[in-house]
Length: 408
Image (cartoon, rainbow, N blue to C red; front, side):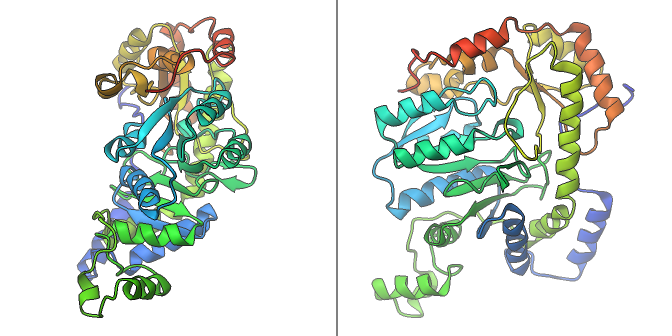
């Protein structure tokens, strides 16, 4: 069982897909963004249930595009923003880079998404214009309640669903609850286009602004109404319009080569999501009686990995590594304790997020892992792992009190 390493994540691109790609490449097709990109976007939007999808070169670029496009849209009354303390660097970094004031939100002890009480507290105190949330390891936030709070305080909601492709709550796929949602197609995510990401939205105006900003800020890709109205507003003639920039944009485009893989990958997304859910259930049955296990309300859980807490994380890491089992910290712990944040804002302490930071790990979950390997992982984990007691009581207590400031 230990002859080959059990990877935390595995490549979803098969040899057959690579062979098909090589045949397609030799037919001398257009490799840059073209018709296949549009087809991939249509397929993905249909899968999520959104009106629009915008293909970009990474999930990080997807977050940047959502945030910058909202800023350029003129809809934000201020540059105050809420970000989960337990998230990813590029969920937060566009806000820092674009001059927002970010406020870290405490983690919910069940879902590890945002804590609703602290989220509303931050809304009351700072009246932020925007919030971005993360569905940690594929588990949905408490979306009905969260959307209600955002409506109450007029907060535009963005979803980082990069770990949650295929998860469904209340008959709605994640990435379709807010004004826009982001996804990643990096190696080891649910599907892969080598590098790549997607933004989904049901907002027509924002969609067209994102199409422009994705490609330099020109109007070449936008819908006809916007193309004509922008040119008319600024008195741009047809020749000058070819190189006219309506927004200070980026080049966040991907290619038709990557989209070719994406179209192929989407044919098996249901199989991938089902396997990931079954793997999670197996981990849960083996470990949840003694160790922390995320709980959330879902119709379908497209689990990214199995997260838990141990009091001897380094020992567990060394033991599993010796048995060729790859593990990682639970995402990156709390952003409030990361060096970049401490240097800029000072350390931010949030009780539940701090527990995730100090004790959190996650175990492998992907399409290529089978039930025997999961049993092997659990066996080796249980040989040395020590529960972080009394984590249930501690987490429940911490979510009742938010005396620590989650602000700059």
